[in-house]
Structure formats: C-alpha cells, structure tokens
Amino acid sequence: MTEDGDAGANGTDADDPATEPGEEGLTYSDAGVDIGESEAATAALLDAVGNVVDTEYAGMLEVGDQYLALATDGVGTKLMVAEAIEDYTTIGIDCVAMNVNDLVAAGVEPLAFVDYLAVDEPGETLANEIGQGLATAAEETGIALLGGETAVLPEVVTGFDLAGACVGMADQDAVFPGEAEPGDALVGVSSTGIHSNGLTLAREAATLDHEYTDPFPPNPEKTIGEVLLEPTALYTDLLEPMREHGVRAAAHVTGGGWTNLERMGEHHFEVDDPFDPQPVFEFIQDCGNVSDEEMHRTFNMGTGFVAALPEAEAEGLADAVDGRVIGQVEAGSGVAIRGLEL
Image 1 (cartoon, rainbow, N blue to C red):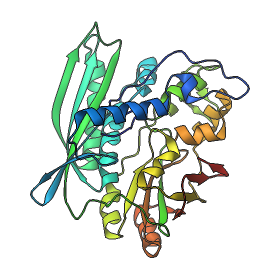
Image 2: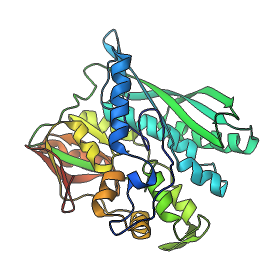
Image 3: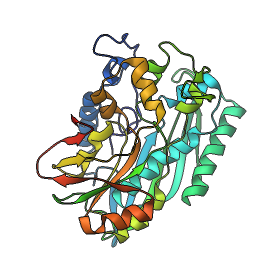
Image 4: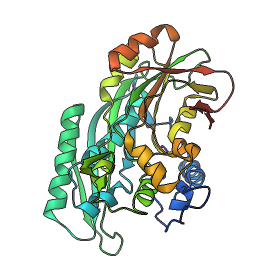
C-alpha cells in the first residue's frame, strides 16, 4: 500500500474549510490535508494488515519466479473541480495514471485495471464521460479494462468518488531494487501540470479570488478549471528504457511533492536542474501566498517522475525517455532543490 493521491493509500482527502492565508501563506494543512498524519495512518494500516509484501509503490505476491503486483488509488479532490465545471472527460485518465505510474515506479508492467465509482445518484453523462477517460488511458498504456463497480450510496457519498486498482506482473529480477546509491544520477521526466495531487490546496488557493470558470491569467483561452483538470501524465513508456539502462529506483512524484525522492533510500538527493514549473504552479502560489517550501512539499513543480541509476547510463536514459539529468544522489539525507532543503 502506498501513501499516494492527495492524502494516502486509501484515496482519502480531508476537505475541512481552509483558513485564510496569513502572513506565512496558505499551507496544505490549512487546506485540510496533513501529510504527516496521512503517512502515520498508512503505517498503522500496514501494521494491522500484517504479512503484506509491500514496496514503496505496490504490494507484491510471489508467483513462481514472478511477482504479481497490485496498486490502488483514487483521483482525490480533483473530482470537485470536474463537478464544478461539469466536465468529467479527463478524470478517468487520472484514475488510471495514478495507478499505472505507481507500478512503473516499482519496475512492474501494468496489465489490467478495474474502477470503482460511488455516486449519490446515478447519471449517464457522468458515467459516460468517466468511461471515455478510462478508455483513452487504457489505449495509451496498453492495459485491459476489466470492468468495475458502480455503487449508488446516497447516505454515504455526496456527489461522487472515483478510484481504481491495477494489476501487473514482472519477473522477480526485473523489479527495481528500490534503493539508490550515492554517486547515482537522477533522470527526470516532465509532468503535465498538477496531476492528481495537492488539489485541496490548489483549489483553495485558486478560488480565494477567482471562479473556476474565470479565464486562466497566463492563458486566457483556457479557464482556471480546465487548467486544473489537465490530466496526469502516463509514464508506462518509461518502463523498458529504465530496465535497459539499469535503473535502481524510481519515484512517481505524487502526494508529498519532492519528498517522494526519499522513497529511493536514505540519501541526500541534490536536484540542480529540474524541469520548469508550468504556469499553474505560479498562479496557485500567488493566489494563496504559498511558500516555496510548501509548494515543493505538495506539488511536482514540473517534474512528474524521477529515476536513480548509474551515472554512466544517465544520458542514454534521458535521451530514450525525453527527459534529462536533473541531479545526483549523495551521502546524507533530505532533498535539495531550488535553494530549498526539504
């Protein structure tokens, strides 16, 4: 089980009313999500479950000389943006992406996906548009959609919730070891924007003085809602190149932002050339007076996936995946990026 999405493995996302940003600016905790509490809850769940073969991104079961891997995640409060502007065509892509990307970070090929849609009342438009997104993502990633479940729960759900689970297989020797080494290079691949993490903070900041239907100031041809709904990048095409170039560990930059790199081991991750953040991040930061550190602890800030591998292989991987070398692994602890120590 993984701590992913806005607030953890179970796809939960607290939405308590946020405080107004003060001198120190709006934080993810102000907006209703405490990453530390989420991680503690996830750890408690794993302790209760017991004999789970768990990696940082997927649970795995030995099946002969292979691993059967499972990942599950939801879309989080990005759903509330879709509901506000009545556009559900992209969130199915997000649901698939948040799951398949976790399997890819573990070194596992995603094979099949099921979804779970919970609604307070059934609606054909909602279901059809979500289905469009699921089908688009399945075609792009080559996975099979094996159906799913739609539950009508008027006393449990207000509006709707969308989550899914993905299964994959990999030879045991093909799975990434999961531990970077000092001296390794870091290769990054750009994101498409916010993806499906930190939307509780993003929504709160964006709507302090704007509506979702307002033009997005950096690009008035789009609305703020449309920019927030830009779907999560699908990273399945990274898997084979990463295997070919000897990747030791990978990080899908999700909830917790750049601290996700610490999933690759207790080292110091020096990031000196990340991808530039898309304009949506500056917009959110300005609207909520959010600190640089809070932005990097919450969002991907332009880089959605990072791999650690021997330095000699780094440029080859970067060329193969349309990425670039963004830093290196050193002895120590924490993540250094853009003058910040996380």
